[in-house]
Length: 191
Image (cartoon, rainbow, N blue to C red):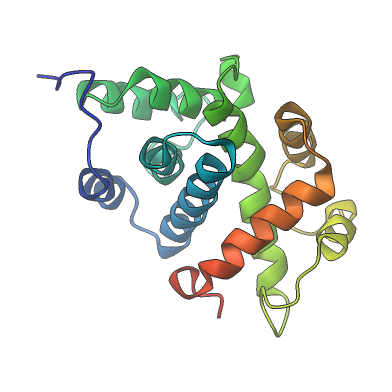
């Protein structure tokens, strides 16, 4: 039985769901990274921090168990619906995967799309540096984006389109995401 639509599940509820479906440390850390960026996006744009953070935390929770384009994020969306997660959260999560053809109309959906792949890419760049995130500049990230062999599974097109949909300069958004990840470096194992 689903819960009422107006009740936003707690972070503890979301963490339990994440840990139930996501077993690898790397995907959990990705969830924490995107959660942090989404919380900061909500602050920046004057939106609901908890809603944005839950969306970031859960955007890939079903990916490990249901990794195909036919399954992710469709299975997760159904699970979230059954558990009473708000439509805005589910819609943003569906929209983060371009192949779903779900339009990203809300600021939350745009922030998720603009932050998901970019967060993962920045962390990949940081892992290659002795100082990790410390001192990382947007120019270094842009340089690595041009190297198609580096982190090849990250969609450069999604990063470019996400930033464009957000309507901010690329360097500004890259710097914003770097700063948020730096503030959360301990949690992400990037100190």
